[in-house]
Length: 210
Image (cartoon, rainbow, N blue to C red):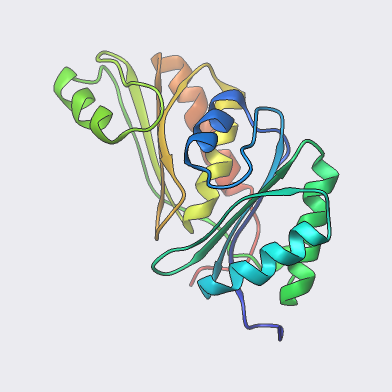
């Protein structure tokens, strides 16, 4: 594979998957299921079909296990995890060598939108509960919603939210053009989660999207 053929959109290393984050991920994963405490590598790339050779390189070059290799409309997505952070790092190094890139070649994420709603109305809570795959949004709670681009970086924001605050993960989606996150709870806890999510995204380096 020649350098420059692959565009590395997202490259996210999570050192320790939090309980809710890991449980949510386990409900949508297609391969080996991760559990709380695992380390994880999440990669989003183009062209999407490159996921097959890159997962091959990652798992053969380490003891990490693949959760999924997905080709969606525009991009390819890879999830790899292990109890060992170093195994995940090694999987990432093997993957990057295979496509002739480094971690610094990833795109730098940006927050597309973020908002906080306090005292959620019962009718709006029901609408959100219709599509959520995580915890139920209870009327009267506060709700934080974030969108990021590239989409894959939303996984880092989600995990950091749970590290920083006593919140519920209502839903997150790292697939598509924008990644989206919904967390709920007491207003003070949701505010702390918001700060953690924004900090996680803003601290990521990489190439400019423009």
